[in-house]
Amino acid sequence: MKRHALSTRLWHWLNLLCVVILFMSGLNISNAHPRLYWGGWGYSAADAWLILPRFPGWMTIPGHYSLAGAREWHVLMAWPFALGLLFMWAAMLLNRHFRRDLVTTRDEWRWSAVRADIVKHLRLDFHHEGSKFNFLQKLAYGLVLGVLLPGMVITGMGISPGMEPQLSWLIDLLGGRQSVRSLHFLFAWAIFTFFVLHVALVLLSNPLKQLRDMITGGRDAA
Amino acid sequence: MQRRGFVAGAAALFLGACSKVADSSAGQSLFRASEKWHRGAQRLLGGGGLVKEYDRSEISPFFRGNGSQTVDTPEYAAAQAAGFADWRLEVTGLVTHPLSLSLDNLRRLPQRTQITRHDCVEGWSAIGEWTGPQLSSILEGAQLLPEARFIVFRCADTLGGARYYESIDLDDAFHPQTIIAHALNGEPLPVRNGAPLRLRVERQLGYKHAKYLTGIEAVASLEGIEGGKGGYWEDRAGYHWYAGI
Picture 1 (tube, chains in turn yellow, brown):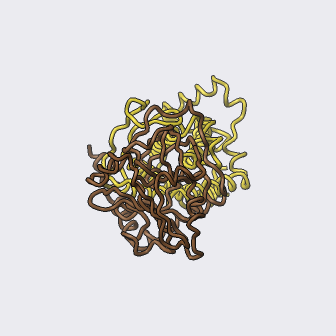
Picture 2 (cartoon, chains in turn blue, yellow; picture 1 turned 120 degrees about the horizontal axis):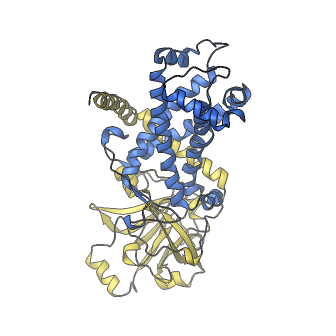
Picture 3 (cartoon, chains in turn green, red; picture 1 turned 90 degrees about the vertical axis):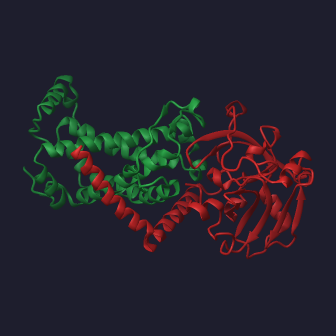
């Protein structure tokens, strides 16, 4: 059996492309109105709970300020991003990747076990027995796959005025349109944080093998 | 510093590739296709549903103006001084009965008052109460010819030397919450918000809501109208024609 299923590998790289383009075009969109608000409305600096810095061109798509150009990319990549996520969830449930590798057990939530896992991570010791992922990995992947990525799709639809007739209940539930926009930005930065940690941990744990395995599938240790 | 240089270098390569795609005709047609998919998906899921209407207590303390905040002509100044008594809204194009409506004519049509949220493409929102006749009742009075597929809105304001204009399809034109507003929060429309008349097309972003309306034109195609892309920002900056996204 391969270490990573074909569906996982295909989605992983497609999702990387989508997330990078969505994030970089999102920073250009952020520059158009770099203020975040809570509630149904908000339009001035006095209403804002956070005023973001201006992101330089090399961090954004396109490389110069263009709200229209950034929206073209953002709106285009939303499709493979959302459909890819749907595909990955279907595949994970069908091939049992979710049940086998991502579902945590009650034992793993015990504070002593969590603490031991954190200490091991801080020592850069990534060896673990039994399941494929350790607790912190399961938690991170579960949070990304179950909350942050779907959260981006849902909040993205929520700030789309064409979806207002069917999603106004959801927008109310999340505290209003500007709250939904704030959440969209917060989730994006949470995914960015995961991305940085994920790449850092790969670099610390046999990066060439990890990279090769995520392309070819590798061989299962068990 | 070196690592940062590497990241910036990789970003530059990636940005170069992205701009190549964006500038290519295949890239452009992909962008247009995704805009159509969004429109199709939203219409499929939403049908003719209404956007949320708010309570009076939820109206924002101020309704910001954006884009043109006035019309910089002596004619407009004179019209404003006269309380827009002679302002006309011409209904032309592919209609059986072209109309020329005064503000009084519009106020005498059945009125719709709705408290809705305005979402600017840049990201801010404001909530206000709008009053005016439904666009559908004006179009029913003029009687569209079967060839009519789009409604074009002509405006008095200019930005950067070009006339502002916008267009929507018949799905949005006949939506119950699409109105020609003459009042905001119970008062005649302020100049910054488009006095004396503006479009409210609630399922789309702010740049669709044309201000300082002078005309409504029914057309079969947007080709040949101004820049051909269906609106001022669409022509000038490449904004999506469908602004429901």
